[in-house]
Image (cartoon, rainbow over all chains, first blue to last red; front, top):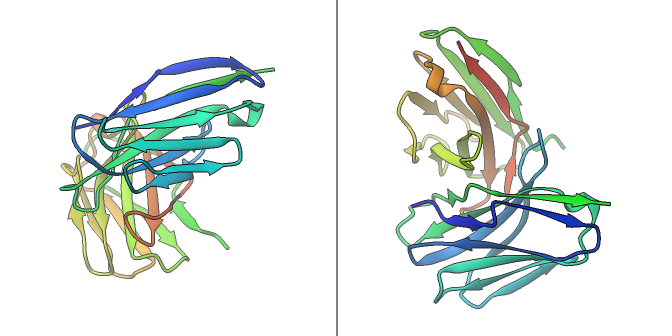
Length: 111
Length: 112
């Protein structure tokens, strides 16, 4: 079951904040976040392994709410370089080494 | 340090033709994956390998075969290409399933 990412797309001005959500209908074991720029390969941002875990990466951070079966990615004071499509990959307890990926959230940052 | 290298980068096939995509990694990773990416659908796992000599089916394995004869290489084969296999194919490798995955630059395949 593919996780649902929301919103599908968002347009921001430089310096604004954004939140991207990744929701699952099944219990999550881990959540992986990647960013992909147009025509390029996905690039790793972070992995959340435990319910309640929060991680930070410069001005990009994420949380994992195991009860709600959801993870959120927070981008604060966005920069032009944050533009791209953000994907969450979810691992379920019966995934057998596989990640199931969301359809992506396209983020456009305007100067 | 090359990371993950995919060849070729672009290919056009006629329906029914066969081809092999090569993925090579120089990070001594155990896990390797083949994904396809279609517009609006994210990444879908085709096949994966958890070590040399092992392979397993992912979400969308039909029409594809793989081999992992050497730890550093993971080959994806299309025996009889179909237009539905037009896609961008990414190879990735990682130390484990819950570690950072490194992706190749992708292969854009068009089947006409």
